[in-house]
Image (tube, rainbow, N blue to C red; front, side, top):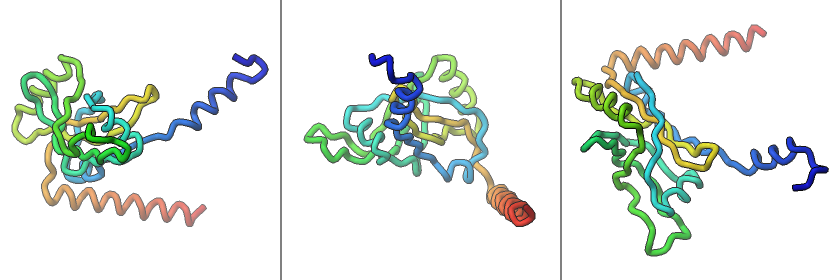
Length: 167
């Protein structure tokens, strides 16, 4: 290691290399009231992680369920990897989520109650380069709740505009 170069310069180079990947489920907060949040790892094949690192994934119409003490994500779209050969993955397959047993038990007890479900909210690559999925325990909103959420959002926008004009 070259001691003439400061350590902060080396760290800055590493940070510039990493491109942050944040794939959000924008409909989740609109369609559901979100309660508990969990971060889970995902079991992926080689071409899947490469495709996610390129940002070619989607959480639209994705949901999770518990089966035999394991949490699975279903209907998550991960595009084919362009340099992948015949070993390429299936785009919408079920993928296993990695959580602690006590987290799985807590999720399972909550989801057994009527009206609750597990909704993925964010897919990202952490600082170690691993794919992580943020999931939330959610309850579906009624139509009037959605209208109320839209009204609050519009009010916040109007207040922000008023503050910007005033200053």
